[in-house]
Structures are given as C-alpha cells and as structure tokens.
Image 1 (cartoon, rainbow, N blue to C red):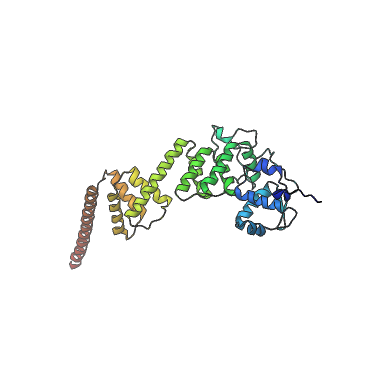
Image 2 (image 1 turned 90 degrees about the vertical axis):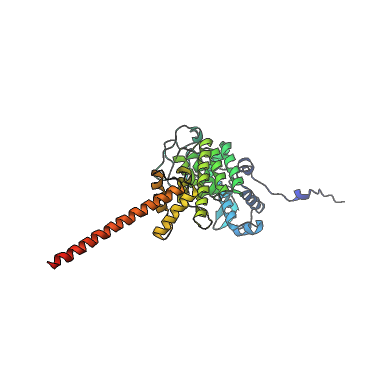
Length: 347
C-alpha cells in the first residue's frame, strides 16, 4: 500500500526573501509587488520585460518602472536585457550621505546630509534657494527615509490614493525632494496634491512647480496653504467668468489669464459688465483682444475711481470728445500753415 501527503496548493511553493516583507512590503506599490512575485516564481529562468508584461497584462512601462525599483534595492539584477534574482538581497540602506542620481548635491544650509541630522520638517530654519535645483534623491535614500520616518510612508501611500494609481519611483522622489529640499511639510504637500487633482493637473511637474513657489512664499502651514488655495480657486473662477464674457472657447485658463482676471474682479472689484466694456473698447481700437490693453484701460479707471458701467461710458465719451477736439485742432494748424504758404507765394 502506498501513502501520499496531499498538501494541495502547498505542493508547489517558492521562496520569498525576508527583505521584501521586512523592508519593502509597506514601501512598494501594488504593481511592484506583483512583478517581484512573478520574478521570484520564475527564479532560475531567463526572462525579459516583455515576458513579464505579457504574463501580468501590464504595460511595458509599468514593468520597467517596477523593475527599476527592485534593481536599485538590490533584489534583482539585469545582464544584457535578461533579468534574474540577485544572489544578494540585502538592501544597502546604511548610508551617511544623501545619494543623488546626478553629480549635484543638496546645499549645506539646512538640507539633509545624513541620518543623524534633524529632519527638515522640524527645523525652524528655511533652506536658502540654491542657484540650481539639485538632482532627485535615489530610490535607496527614499527607502531609507521611509524605513525611518512613518510620515514619509504616509505621504507616499496617500499620494497613490490622490493620483488614483501607484505613483512611479520618479514621482515619489519628486515628493521627497519637495519635502526635504523645499521644506514643505507632509500635510501641506498632500493639500497641494489634492488641489492639483481637483483642477485636473495631478502630475509631478505641476506639483513641483507650485511647491517651489509656495516654498519661496513660505507657505509651510496648513492655514497658509488653505489661504493660497482659496486665492487660486477664486482666480480660476474669475478667469472662467472672463472667458465666458469675452466669448472665448471653454478651456483651462493660463496662469497669466488667471492673474489678470483675479486682479480685475477680485482685487480691483470691477463688475463683469465694466470689464466687458473695456474688452469692447480694446477690440474696437485694436481689432482683437489684447489683455495688456484691457488691463491698461481698467487700471486707468481704477486709479480714477471709475467703477460702474455708466461712469465707464461717460469716461469713454469724454475721452472720445477730447480726441476729436485734439484732432480738429491739428487740422486747423495744418490748414493755417497751408494758407500761409499760399499767401507768401503771392508776394
């Protein structure tokens, strides 16, 4: 009689390095974990990015991004396009300096240089702006920071929720750079990301651009961030209203259009009909909409305390009469000079 122990699914198993669970389970995204599990399942085999992409029904770009994470942490290695698990899976996180992907480094005036220095978010000193922006921190430094600071983990996990997808390594590194170089606290960065998502601009490039501006303006508290977002929101609302008044196509307003509209409606407090009248004056004079021209008309009215449509029309009529009078005076001088010349020729 023969006996057999039926373990079901346990009849076929593969090993998972402890480092993946201990150090990367809370750091890696869903796509990255799926990829590494597939790689470990096929340990000892040769496979390419395309093989993984086909097996997991993922885009090749997502697979490459996930593999970059595991390569930089030392879990896997790549040789001439063939990916294999690395024999050394221990992540090298004990580093004294912030390792960057390029040759540039963070300045010495308050920026993090090693793990013993105080975190930038708790420092009262604001780092001065360098002549050029440093390169982003590499994935090894990002991993080290996430292992040591739960707030960084929270930032990255919440970023995935706001973006509606797993953020890439590049996006994570951008957020860390904003936090540690630009000095924005985690909660302020999250508020900025949520605003970007609300206006349909939830991308790393826009977020970093706004974050630099906020850092320069010392918007490092939730109260100041909320005030700036209210200002930006009112500016966008003003810009959308102006675009409808001027009959412009429906689209996202530019930064310049937003600033002008905010000035006209929210700062100078002009009623929409007065702004539209200034626009009509511009089109009549120039044949097209020129924002600078409209702004100059409104600025003159603002300095002259002209705020109603009747006042604006009266001012325009006064200016037209003045121009006609000046024009008539010019013609009189020309006629006088012409008559005088004929008179002198007669003698």
